[in-house]
Length: 480
Image (tube, rainbow, N blue to C red; front, side):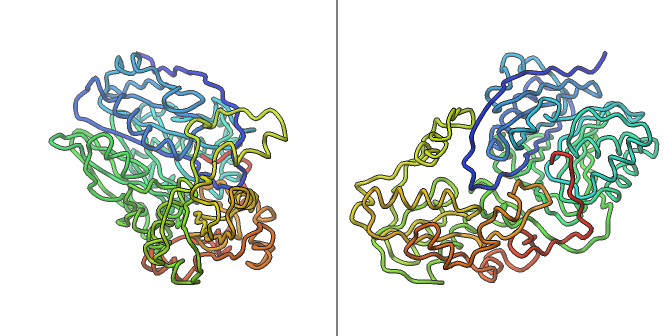
């Protein structure tokens, strides 16, 4: 029986608001000892819960004791997959992937999971993150005769594992992980086994769960995906850990003795869903505490606190509770704009914020407003939001950010603009305040963020330009 890849095309054009960072990918995996007829559906549900981590493409590979079948395409999870087709895919394991990238690099070739043959059997891989030495490794593989079918660094990982398969499963993956460098969370089907790997610093998240009253194991980028399939969170996959799941259960080993930890701090600020728990930290609580600390940092006389939907809302609630200033829903977000919304002209692009967010005049008019958002990248969206508030009748607008100033790029799997486009890299707080038209401006301090997260075991490169890995190469490959 041959392995089959079924492409489904759902091409999307979109004009994303330019002032937000984007997570590159989300991964999901599930393993059951015996084939079942709902394995693909459960993978679909898991990806649906991770849709916020990537909206450009989606894919699922279903395995039936070594036979692999992959369905992937461009678009949202709900658009790529046909439920009637998924219900016919019987298997004992599945992995899934949702991907984000820039518009220009959008292609079915870069959609995951990716596939390769090896002496260990068929391999399917899904990857969240980014390698910092992918250029050099890709060049070496090409010199050895490897043919690449995509522009992603994920295919570098796939080919390294396939070429090292003669060493055996554990050694092939261990050797690969000690060759690559960067932030990554991997789920793979190799023959009849499910494999999960997290990078040595734990930069990218990955957790393990088990469906209640069953022998079905689940892995996901965030715990919210475990919840949706009825799985209980067992624990996070540790930094530098490899899990192999088969009919004997879960086998754990470590491919590195690295003791340093550097989980991505932006997962808690923006990327993760507020109902997720990452590395033992409740995302909702972290964001609420960020709002509380903001209120303590700089008091202001105001009438109402408003959160920018969606990721600014929890911090705004925390700010309100700490300051005693009432919270209100002063911005309404369009549920239907989506990433497929086509903006055909520059004049409409300038209206992108208003198309997505509309102020409630009855809440804002005549009020001194504290507007809370998660982060500030270019400053363009903030400027338009503040103008919207004033146009709706706000007498004052005080802007608060629930993260430190973003001053540098990310090399580990987050799509952050180049440094020259980051407003905090070349302007002071006072200059930014004038530029965006706020009455006052404040960012969460780095010290307070560390207090909230519980120490400095987090990557803070986008705030400090100090990275947990050295020798970073600027890759031409697309991230994940």
